[in-house]
Length: 110
Image 1 (cartoon, rainbow, N blue to C red):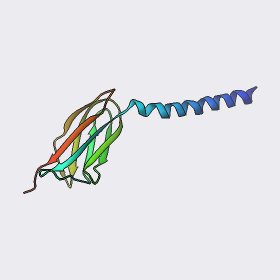
Image 2: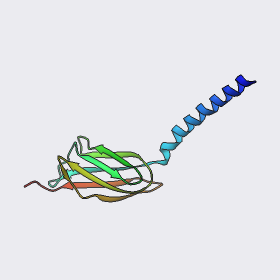
Image 3: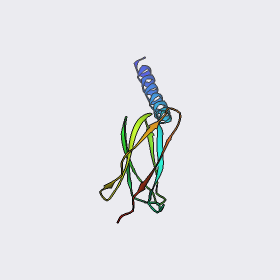
Image 4: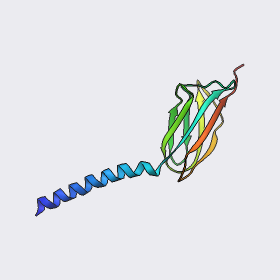
């Protein structure tokens, strides 16, 4: 009888882990956007950070785009920085049923 109970406990644990692993990300949302310079050219390699119920960073891709996934719903401050230059943060609200968008424009150097 004991081996059956042990096997049952193991099966319940594995199934629970799989269900939680699949279900948990669906409860999370994202912030996406672009970073460009004052002339409208996209900027790659910019560090973007979302700080709120959790803190997550990402870097912009070759098209200046970024996406920060698996966020908990709530209020975030999103900042962008490149080579020591940081832009003021944007306040972004990530809802339970949606995603947020943010656009950053670095001023011209000069």
